[in-house]
Image 1 (cartoon, helix red, strand yellow):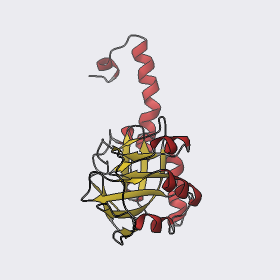
Image 2: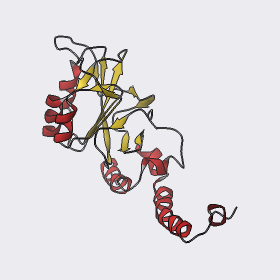
Image 3: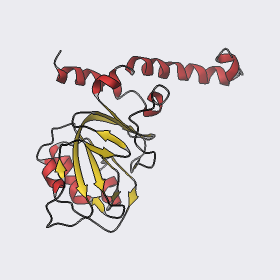
Length: 206
């Protein structure tokens, strides 16, 4: 199988797995828990396309959309800034037009009502009225970045849901998919046994 076919097969399984299920199995690849989605009950997965934005400089953000492929998840590194929003209504429409699946950024957004109205999933630290500026020429497109405390490479597989965000190379995630699917199949059975009056210690054979 080609890498593209392998990733397609992996993504079709991964979309059924919660980040928290993988959190039972591994420690690496998880972004800071403060990154949360503006939409409820959402899960997305796909290959990462990356961009790095320094300070209040939003120059490279429109450029990364020129390289995007439908189904990509845009991961944004915010360098040396904890105030400016780099994402809002205009960028949301632009991203949807090129088929971006979701956005993950270790910074802030604005225009949250417009983002929610567009039903576009964005994971961020929160909101800010102070925005990045035009007229600068910094940043980088589709290079290795750091987002939410972890290293993200272009093409890494991103899984994001109501619990948080995970990003790892495809071969690393693939090792844990079958075990994660098994755990999720067992969880409803455990809950049912608890409702029948069994203790968790009994169920776990402790």
